[in-house]
Length: 238
Image (tube, rainbow, N blue to C red; front, side, top):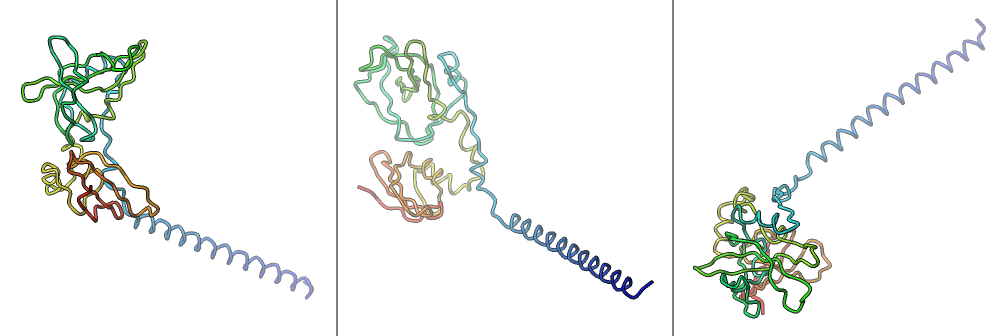
């Protein structure tokens, strides 16, 4: 074998060894990088348990399906948002000229019936109403409308058909105690505050970590400022 050929073979072998070494180094780099990504994923905080709660819905599309509301108790999703009216069992009509009150935060109701009634100011349309009793008297509140046989029923957005105490049983007992007293405490999240004092009206904001919400609270308005999703400042509001 000539010296020139030996030199060429040595060059080729050296190049092959270099390529192999680079390949091994790359493989080790990729594995290390993958482990780093997996470690970061493992370190990422889990989603709050509230986001895993998926309340059941009835998806009512007519009177018959809406009457499923009578088959179990229901709970009000947003208190101080929905008005109810006196209902006359003899005439089968609600008195929409007189507001009897507003449904309370997570108030438990026994729906006695779901029917239709006149829609003030809309002679070509009727309201779908849910009837319940309170303190021995009958009341009704609208849960939808019907026009020319086409129903629009939004009870799924208004009512829970499962006990919220069970849906959110992962909340501490101290939180539930405050909710039952309609009190807002520091550290509550928006779900918990809404359960305590009802619907809220958020203010415009620029910082995604800070959110201010005004709650009518049945005539006792309060303002809650959330920081990173938790109530940080709680003040009376005018």
